[in-house]
Image (cartoon, rainbow, N blue to C red; front, side):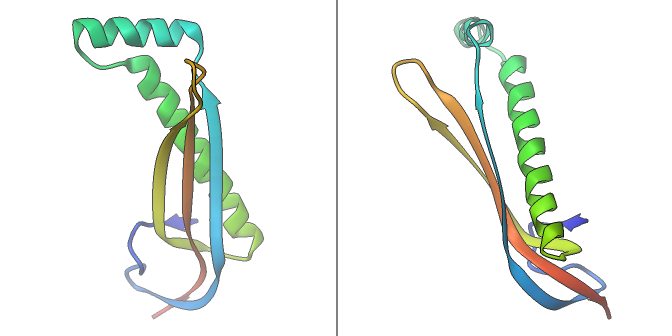
Length: 109
């Protein structure tokens, strides 16, 4: 499946708009990752643990969106957007990753 942030696919014509496809993932960060990230923040540098978790969450959300678009009969998703949000309170934060785009059927130009 083609997934793009643009509103068109080069060399293809959008033949049919099928609706908006979403993918959502909410992940929690465990104590070890929080502790390690805190040390990284204190001493400087990047938090590899959080970066890996973020990448996994984004990949899962994209896969979910693609599956939902495919269920609509799409062969592409255009105008894809990614959104990250921290939810929770009292140190019980979770990361929410959402992706959405327009599911479409393509035609060759």
